Image (cartoon, rainbow, N blue to C red):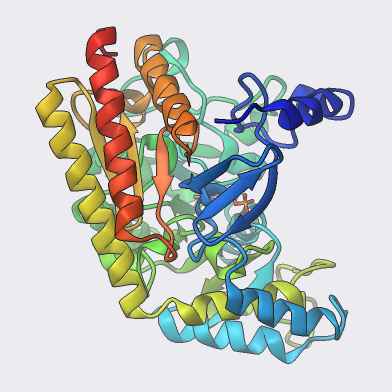
Length: 439
Ligand code: PMP
């Protein structure tokens, strides 16, 4: 393979303008960030002319791959007509109608620019509706960069608190105590403990925010029993359920809650619904979403944004989502099932302590003998981290780009041969790990 000369040069320039030399925290930087020149379909090419099968998909956003022709065409047509207006355009109607038609219970929505904003406005809506300020969330789960929802993501054994009643811990030094104290942390899939905590704190909780398959917990799923128990406890106490499907909306035509029987009051969406452009959406039942309406007075939650519902994101999102038919989701899921099964077969043959989690078009490799049951078990030992770093590096050397965590996602331009390339590369990796002694 060719050198990384051009990327190295760019990365050196970047040291002088970006802390850490990058615009994001979660990018592989050893020995340098890989600078991308272009993407097409499932493939990207870097500055040095190296090609990679893209299993990263910009943090799972690119479900139809790069430069998806219907998106390019729609955006090109729109950009000649202008990129943003204060007034509405018809483009926002098409995407909103498509989403409301697909997700049962989502009667109304509002567009924003990121998943973070979607979660933020959903929490504000729940506060204004209930008159309460506290939220509950799953320990370790990531929901974007809104202050309250950042609580309890980087705890370690020294400040974890006990298993069933996880401590709420700050995400960074100086995070206000008032923020930390507004958040109740639940252990995933521990229904009795979660019910107890919800009942105890009910009077101050406006919402329970749930991503039913949190990536930071290693793509393990909330069980239908846990979701049902949490939902029942919320209903008993007038607490709203906010489903964060920013990432997991890609699991199916109707999203993930529908697959699991969860009936949210509010949804936060993002990523795939923008077709590769910045987007977020807050959705919900009509009476819940009334919180954003002006009815002869100010809205209970004023909501807007300079670039919200801009016609570029709207036309891109619509073209992207329209191509995602039930058949497209079924094909992605079948490819995901085939890949997970091939990786599991290779692991079993190697006898090494690895496992694979995920569903539909999402998967993650762990250097652990069994799938983690909660956030604490998802945290890696240094030896396990080392094994995943070798996996990411070996995949990159073989021309496969994945997230630094060992997470991968599939996209519709991928073919059976790509799935074989992934599983073949993984077999070679396991073979080398055997010689190395494994994690
Ligand atoms: N929620 C979840 C579950 C996410 O995965 C993400 C992004 N990775 C967000 C919220 C935040 O979305 P954004 O990066 O668009 O702000």
